[in-house]
Length: 236
Image (cartoon, rainbow, N blue to C red; front, top):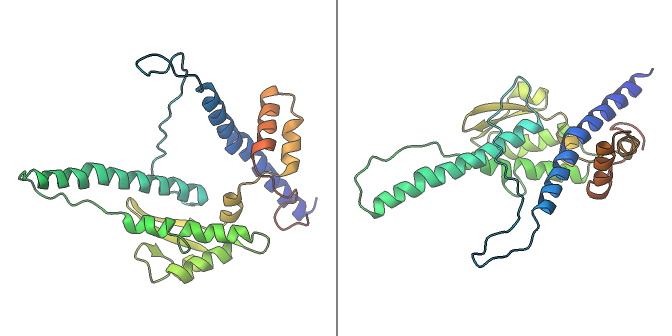
C-alpha cells in the first residue's frame, strides 16, 4: 500500500462520514419538515388547520479546544451573532427606553463584539470573504495561502486579530471573541468550506442495502454539489 493511497482512503473516509452524518441528512430532514408543513390555510380566525410542524432552536455554545478548525469558527461566529442580538435587545434598546421615559438608572457596561463580527463577515476583507475567494480558485489555492491572506489583510491592523511568529509558522491565526481568544488552524478550511461530495461516495451510498441511506444518496445527487472524484493532491 502506497502512502498516497492511504491519504486518499482517509480523504474518502472523512467525506463518507460527513455525507452521512452532516449536510445530507440535515438537509433531507429540513426539506421533509418543510414539505410536511405545507397545508392550506382555513378558518375565519386565520389559523392553520391540520398542520404538523417542527420547531428547532439549536444553540451550540462557544467552543475552544486544543485544536480549532472551520467547524469551531462557524459555531463561534453563530454565537457572536446571538451575543450581538442579546446585547441589542436586552441592553441597548432597554437603556434607550429608560432614557426616553426619564427613568433613573445606572448605565450597564457590556462587551461590544461589533469588531469581531466585522473581522469575520466584512465584505472582501473579512475572514469568510477571503475564504470564499480562495475556494473559487480551489485548484491552485491552499490553506496556507488563505492564512497568508489573513496575515496581510489583518495582521497588526485589526484589534481582534492576532498572528505571531509561532502562529504563522503553523498557518494558524487567533480571533479575539467576546468569550475569549481562540487559535484556529487553517488546515482543512478550504476543503470544508467547499463542502462537495465525491461521485464515488454518492455511488457507494446509492448501493447501500439500507433504504434510508439510498434515499439520502438520491436526495444528495439532486440537491448537493458534486466534487471531482479525486482526493486533494491526486490526479482527477
